[in-house]
Image (cartoon, rainbow, N blue to C red; front, side, top):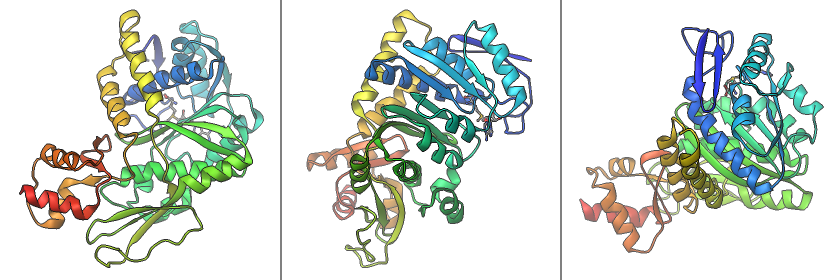
Length: 386
Ligand code: SAM
């Protein structure tokens, strides 16, 4: 048995050599960062909706996430933790008891607990091994209006398009392995959620925060209900991204019924298209700044989160990105394309800014630049700096 201190809780988990899905009870210390962010996000959501929130951690593992939700978030009603494994359930019971926390504990298959509790939860947390795709339909059935879906995917190679078939199979979307494939991956997951929920007349009102970190992608999605609003959301947020491998031009195509251009308007090469995927916003700046404020507040009157510096860095980056256009430029890829050595990114960004374009960095890639400048002008700027 190992004792773990995280946030305001102390949990016990059986010691094992390697973090893997075959461990008797799953606890991954690397996900402390993810759990810390979740607490800030759920608290911010609770304050926005101004009501007591009931939370279900559908894939509970050791119970640490649910116990922390109950202990560290204010305005929380019932927290339910579910896991298919009886060992995990035992651990969750013990850990809840040791932390003096009352949570409801279920041992059900994830789809079953979601289907049996339609309209009950204000927050549903989906944190399975690998793909969440098998559970999204039940999420659509279960979620009520004005609720929050937190969803993690660790099958990043499928979403990023290392191989096409797994992504088509799991997310019914064609991926594209490019320098911005992590952003595309998040967009494919969000698109899949949006299209799956649509049959229940539910839609993504807003993606509050989304990030790709280490081996996973995570999204905080505000869900609402209504057939007309669902139609409108699909029409304006679902589409395709087309990319030219030869000159690096890219564009987003809105809607499922609109024609996808076949050839690059810049160089005439055949375009490659990814999707259907979410082409709407991936970050909500108001929500993120409230999370940042909360982190500052928390400093004075409660235990500092171990991962605070890392969280602040991510949140500031996501805040900056919130208004930036779709995809980003990888300066090294462009310079390779131009067969020149790369100038300083700061100098390139200064020049873009001087011309009045949006230009920000992105958490997806340290040398990525998000901008509404077109590839042609960007290449001219880069060339002029060499
Ligand atoms: N959320 C946890 C945390 O933050 O520590 C980690 C969850 S772990 C990645 C996935 C858990 O899901 C495992 O404990 C596993 O037993 C459970 N699980 C796997 N398939 C399941 C299913 N179909 N229904 C319910 N639980 C499942």
